[in-house]
Amino acid sequence: MTGSWWAFRQVAPDWPPFYHAAGEPLPSQRSGRWHRQGQGYAQYLALEPLGAWAELVRYENVRTAERAAEYRRLLWLAYVTETDIADLSTFDRWAACELDPAAAVGDHAVCQDLADDLRDAGFRGVLAPSAALSGATNLTLFGARYEKVLLHGLAAWANPRPELRVPCTLAAQGGPPLPLLRATVHADVEHEGLVRWRTEE
Image (cartoon, rainbow, N blue to C red):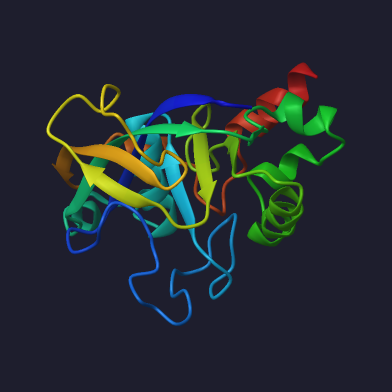
């Protein structure tokens, strides 16, 4: 699918909003759900701000207010305009594509293999259910992207290369909201959204 999305991404204060080559001979971005370290880049965004924070809580296994207070992050709001995005945003869509819906929120290896297939088919990214926050949706872009930091007018900016440049602005800074310590789906907990989908199927 082709479209535009408002999306959120949180990073450490000493990191730019997006991953790009920056002269690296080999991509150093750590492996994630939709890519493997050393095999290119992926930009992990969430369509909801709490979805972006929940990814941090899950990834770092933050379970207490004391641990949450240790984190200082930047939350960026990005206006993404893209083509050829695979829409796997719901468990129904996974099933319709004859894919196991559990893989959407399960082991990363399955999604990494699927990302290889999607890239080979010409897709530039994927919408998928958030593993960290039930009901939220993530947008992952394949490959490097370069930020254009603006104070306002993200959607109005005349982007010369939307396939490479992403306008963004700082939305917040601090640590993850404390209510997420209870709402985040950790790796050792069954995904509430998947359970609900199976029940309603």
